Length: 234
Ligand SMILES: N[C@@H](CCC(=O)N[C@@H](CS)C(=O)NCC(=O)O)C(=O)O
Image 1: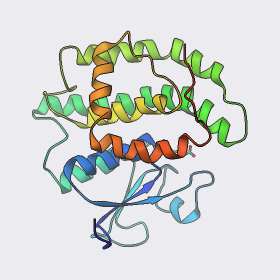
Image 2: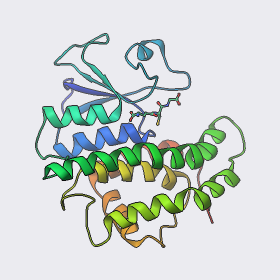
Image 3: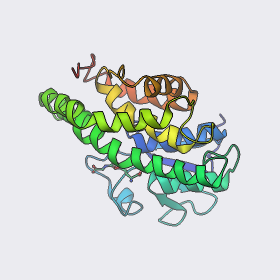
């Protein structure tokens, strides 16, 4: 990497699965980008001006505009679709029209159903409690894993059985989004996926890809400080 600023800047935190999804898309495509950390507790005023939903990540394309709201895109799905359009190769949205639709559907499943369960039900009760100086709420995490996760994991496992990727036998945004969101659980807990072998194998393969492993390592350095050991969910 050179010191020159790149066109694309991702504002966010590697701890966010949505920021890591956008980073992974750039890395898979070989697109260089700058990363600027944004604290969400509290969110700075300059960032609120470019984040109408008050969320990370936001992308800036400096080739469009270098400051202000112009040149920015909020929401990871919009960001990834934009990067796909700007840098079409390799495509991360399926080889067929139907595959394109399915990839978007599974991305949305990951970003909503899986992210809610993993983020709000497991990651936050443990990690956010710790950084606020409180005891981690392990009971809440275990309750989420026992009650909310089984249908989510069964659905994803069923979508994969006998296949390396979710869609069209090729890497898509669906694989990246599912892995990024499942990883919120893996950051704070041992993730027992033994009942879901297709998903377990997919997670392991995906986690080894540089596009996933690099941003994961950045987040891990931050997470392991307050939480040296992962908790047990069962
Ligand atoms: N749909 C959004 C969701 C982004 C999101 O929820 N980001 C979280 C961090 S993982 C956030 O910014 N939360 C701010 C807050 O809770 O105040 C996307 O895909 O970018």
